[in-house]
Image 1 (cartoon, rainbow, N blue to C red):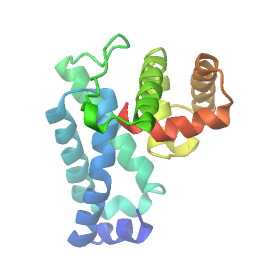
Image 2 (tube, rainbow, N blue to C red):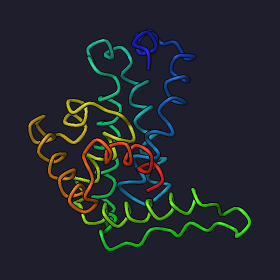
Image 3 (cartoon, helix red, strand yellow):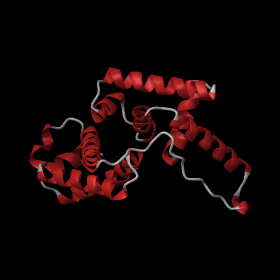
Image 4 (cartoon, rainbow, N blue to C red):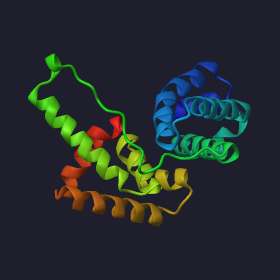
Length: 192
């Protein structure tokens, strides 16, 4: 999101506010799905973050990284909701939804993609929740390590450690170079 949009929100520009909401809604929704399956909770958290942004718009000029601010506000909001509602986070044992293709539409490439996706799902379930969260933020959202650290409320050094351990485990499972692993993660992480 353009910093001018953020500055315009600070001055009370409703059009810029609407643009920011549209820009971040799907991204926050996808991130929320990695934390909980409660759709209503995710949507409430998104709306509450944007209500807070609008309510406190006069102080937005103090925020250096709007993206990190929005993601960390959302994360804190939804985790607070989970704790207060005592909702159980996704467990590593939870099975992913099966992908169902009709016989007519199956082609060799799709079969290969499906097998790779299933292998990736299985491999990601072997990671800790924090490792999966960091992988999602890095490869799906494309955030920097500094932004991930701010969102997850940990140090940048801890972010590098979490990511290195996660990638190391995935690299060992797949027995492929990290560069190829990163490409696969970018391709399949949104569907996982």
